[in-house]
Image (cartoon, rainbow, N blue to C red):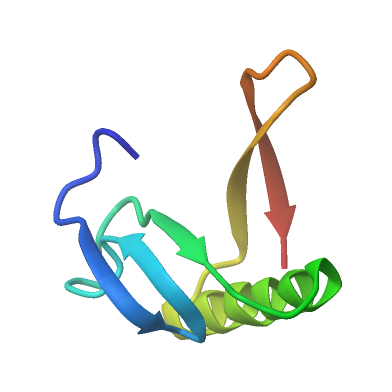
Length: 84
């Protein structure tokens, strides 16, 4: 994400409460990036909301997979690829 161009803070992005993303300006970008923020009353509710947001983004931008950087036990980021 540090090399992404055109990042913006966007409220109510595809159902997320807020996002830092470059996906608003140009759907033809080679690399789309987004950090999504969702709020819910429970962790389970937040996970369900995140799934809906992710699916909406994939549908709107014609994406067939996404990568999700998550920390491992050592605190280093590892990449998970999710097909949809």
